[in-house]
Each structure stands twice: as C-alpha cells, then as structure tokens.
Image 1 (cartoon, each protein chain N blue to C red):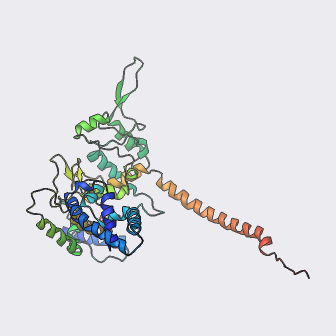
Image 2: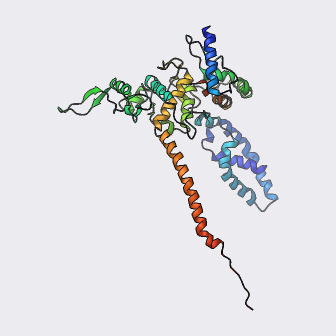
Image 3: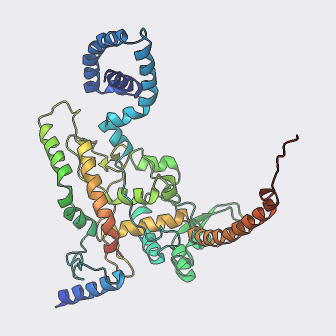
Length: 318
Length: 100
C-alpha cells in the first residue's frame, strides 16, 4: 500500500508537464511530507533502507507506463483528440472493391467544397478515367481549368486549357500563400491523407462530421473552431459539410453524412488507387503459396523420413 | 400519397438490401423529395442518447459543478469525451445502412 503511494509519486514526476497542473502541484505538496515518515517506518521490517528504494526504482520503471493510465489527465485526452469509432466501410473487407459511384460523388464534393483550400497535387485527371468518369467527361472537366505551361518558342510562359494528363489544380501557389490565407494554418494536401493519419478513413470521416458544441469550460479563440477529434480540439477549418451543400448528379440526397462518406471514399481511393488490384493479387498469391506450402511440407517429410525412421541399438559389450 | 409512396419504395429498397433482416423501415430517415434531406447521423445521435444516459448525466453534473468557475482551468472534456465515445460507437454500427 505504501509502495503504491511511492509509485504514484514517482509517476507524477515521470510525466512531462506535470507542474503545469496547479491541482497536481498542490496535491504533491500535501503528499510529500506525509510520505517521508512512512519511508522511515518501512525500514524497520526489512534490511536497511534498500527495500523501499529498490521497489521505488522498480515502480518508477513500471509506472512510467501505468502513470498515464492511473492518472487520467484531461489535457492528454484533448491533446490526442477523441478517438474515432470504426465505421463499416464497404471497401474494408479483404475481398471488397471500392464503391465507384461513391468515388464519383466524392470527387464532386471535393471539387465543390474542398478544392478551394486543399490541393491534391499527386492526382491527375487521367487517374479518374475508368474509376469515376469516362474519358470524354474527364477531358471536358480538365479543359475547364487553366494551366500555366512551359516556355514557348519565344521563351514566354503561357496559359492553356487543361489536358487529361495535368494534375488537379492547386488553390494556392505555395505553402506560404496557403498559410497566409488561412490564419497561419496550412490546409494539407489530400492526396495521401487517409494514409497520412492514424486510422485515416475513420478519422477523416469523424473529423468532417464531428463538429459538436464546446464542452463546458472550454474556450477557443474566435478564429478557431472546436472539433473533438482534432488533436488539441481547436481547428482552423470551419464545418464545411452542410446538408444540401452539393447537388449530386445521380440525385442522392446530399446530407452531411452522405457527403462525408463519399468524400472519404474518394480520398481513400486517391491514397490507395491500387487497392483492388492488390487484393486480387493477395488472393491469388495466398492460394498459390498455400499449394507451395503443401508441396514443401510433403518434400521435407519425404527427405527426413530416412532419418526419422532410423533405429539406433545400444548394445552392452560384455 | 407521395409521402406514402416514398416510404413504401424505401421499405422495399431496404428489404432488397438487407435480405429479410429489416426490422424497421427508418420512417424518419426518408424525407419527401421536395423537402430538405434529413441528416441521418444527427438523427442517430439523438436516438443514441438513450443508451448513453449515464455519461450524459456525468457530463451534466460536471458542467453544473464548474458553472461558477472563474479561473478558466476547470473543464469537462473527460466527461464530454466519454459521452461522445458512447454515442459514436452506437451510431457507427448503424449509420452506413442509412447512406447510399
């Protein structure tokens, strides 16, 4: 029981930033004078002062991890953000493909809602052909944008309508311009975002649809918005997905959750376009290698059968 | 009449989707074509308040406790997170059946 108190005291010291909590500091000051006489008492029953010290050192190592669990700092919770639930994405299971109509709707959401701030500089228009759009549609979509192209024969840069081979357009010329336009925060490039965040698909969906009211006692600067899933809670991006923000071509009702699902499916595809091919390859090669395993097992046992079945007779010499 | 038609159609669509496992046709979820679409996530969050009354009560008790606080250090993030964790897990299992 006393070692438990010592462990907790050491856990207090081992956690960074503990002194910033005034309540913790106050409790430490109260606990410290009580603990020192108890240390003296523990000596009487064991060998010198070694026993509580060694257990204290052992406790320091063990409770470095446990400290975070036994003492739940609310600041840690907000720092990591609320953990997002796992949604049953239709493309998650081991033999599922993407919902391509969802990718198409998601691209529409990206284009109309997100592209004003977020770039997707690793995706070209031609990547969409055969996935979300037909070739003519993609050509028409690309032709709507203006692209700055390399020096002409006269040595001047010129603008031309986009081609299918061009990348998706960037809203800002560089990161500094993006930061300046968004209060110092850089809207990240979304080409790989579902792979670039832990539990990316669920996280992005939870973030986009999770703009809830402030918890009691939390205040945030006027320029920022509260989102519990965002680490720290204060995010620059306002709630972008509102019911009816987009009118889907196929007539699906554009609710917040629907748009969130579609845009996350699109972003998942953008980050992992090879997913369907990868799963097919995985299925094929797991099957082939299972057969190879059977063959290898048979061959090993055949070769070892000579040694396994030999008999050694130990005879006593008279 | 149009309303009834859309509900019947929605019920049949659900039947086909769930192959016999339909228990309710989510009458609340399918609005008329001329009405604003109702967000299924928000509706589910309201319905999931029922199984999450305990964390909700804890949060409300906490916000009451810190009401008079002037120092600005007190907050109810922990209870808030517990409540939303409960609601999220309840919503997540059901939400995608309401989405296309």
